[in-house]
Image (cartoon, rainbow, N blue to C red; front, side, top):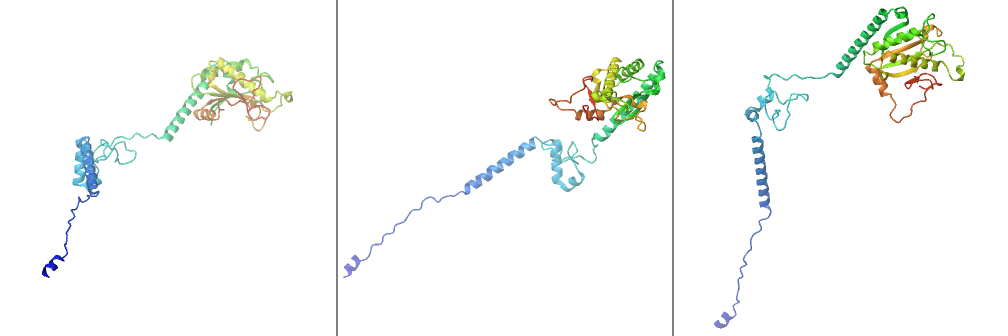
Length: 318
């Protein structure tokens, strides 16, 4: 029986499983990325230090030794103009970086545009005043024109120096109802033209009449056309006196729309020629309002010049 029991004992087999390699996961990638980042920062630091001047290095060292003192007193640091990254000046208008308080600050040359413009206006007014005096002296020194000096009116206007030649009851400038210039008027205009050659300003010519209706004005030729023709005839005499043709920017006839004597529209002084030596502001206004290339100009009078403009009338071009 004992032998049978031994035969009936179960046989136990132990199987030992050998484990494979344990997976490392992604931890090594993180470590490698940190290493590469550290190396990049190191090389960047070496490059910056290699391209930084000794003064900047000392400034950086002083900053880290006593940062509060440098921040309050100012000094050469990483914001110096010699640094790779410029900046750190005392204000946005500074052209240099941080400046020590003991150093001499560079002179700042700032341009005040308003002040400059005022200086230019004063200089131009002085030049026109000198021109005014020169014209008066020329007329007084000319024996032929001395007697008609009372017909000359010189004054400063918003547009510049205005030279007005007014008619006199006993000495008309033009033939009645015509643009034919009297001989003395030709001499006067040519004398003025020679004086105006000495200044670079452009000119505006205006013709004026009194309020007496032009005979036959209902047939198309009125005081508007007459005043424009007289202004244009005056332009030709100025050019004969030596004035360059391109100096005249505008020739216009104003008829009786702007009387010299407002109380008496029929006064002889209303018949006049105005020569305006334009200032810079008046020239700029004219050029700003000039028609664009390709835009048709208003129709002109058949007897007028290229620069003819008749203002203030519905029957004539403006």
